[in-house]
Image (cartoon, rainbow, N blue to C red; front, side, top):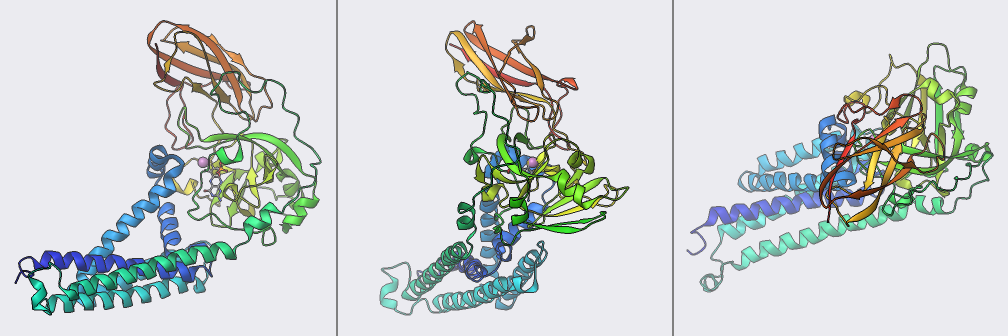
Length: 523
Ligand SMILES: Nc1nc2c(c(=O)[nH]1)N[C@H]1C(S)=C(S)[C@@H](COP(=O)(O)O)O[C@H]1N2
Ligand SMILES: [Mo]
């Protein structure tokens, strides 16, 4: 009876394992079937995206604070743990009472289906991967729990071996079955990813693109836009280093041939634009610094790039907005939306439908093939990536993705000075050291940056050359300090509203404010 001394616990663990393996089958088979559908038809993407949509502002903020731009990886890990726990429980339930376990699996399948079918632009056919996965998972769970039951019911199938081995052959049979099933699930998932990758040719289309020379090229950068202090961020952020913030768990794969922008709503003329229409139009190229409303004081959710695109004021001039319209609701192919004040898109700032970033087609994760870039506004109210729809409307009538979730309707970028050197808690060499960073005040321009050391007087620092009011401006300064701990504060002045406010504000609802403080020490 060596096996029956602790049968329940051991058996429950095995039943839990059966549940987890069966969940793997659900996801793996759905991933394989999903290769023939859009990404949001697969359970992982649909569930994760739904979770993201229901994330309250404080949790989004917490996620960005804690995980930075790895927030999506953190979400996937969290989902994997949750699914494994649920699946383990379902495995135990199914082992004890199959009907209950099966009902649980079907309920899970129904929840996944609800996620899949409520994604933007979902069609009934999108249900197929989940239905196939759930059916396969049920089958796997049935098979594994049966094997486990016969292993437990007949522990002494080969009595001669019981004494010498903790696991009877039939228990090993269960392990073999579970192992094979797990391998099949993993192969299905891997195969699905490969297939999906091979089926979408967006990367190839993107790398084959050629752009016409812009009708209005970017003004040449003046000499000396870069702070001379080592360690200050490059004036132009390379695409690969540009911060990425979006709700897209799976990056939309939109080809230039499939891209259409619908312009409609409160306008005299509704029309559609194709990618070729953009290539044929008079394009402009500008350096613009984008900033995220979730950027904390001193944070790095800002980047400066050279954007090529078609002015939105031309799009709106053709559409001719009706009296009373005060907003443009832009929507992406994956259902994100932003509400931008109509006048901002009509005035002489260079708000564009961008197609290139730093001389390259937009990277897929930065909105390929077309995104919006609007100088002066935080991204959440203006910078829609994968944009496919512009609706001229009124703030009174429509709301957007983040404004529905507690963020402010108006999102002008706040003036901010950032210290990049020294880094917090750095130890500097004794003697005279260079410090520096950037400051931004898109549309208003930076006219002064000051620092204060250890609570002393504010001193003006050296400003690098200004490229335009829409780009960040770098700064540098020399400090000679006594050995020991020090505190540095920095603040900027812009050309319209004056001194940056020292009032501490959280990122929710309309952007962080306050003067950055950096603690460091000198050897
Ligand atoms: N489709 C889509 N566009 C989007 C978002 C999004 O979640 N989905 N996020 C916005 C936000 S909050 C910001 S700050 C910018 C970031 O642009 P980037 O990722 O290219 O830096 O994109 C904006 N455009
Ligand atoms: Mo953002």
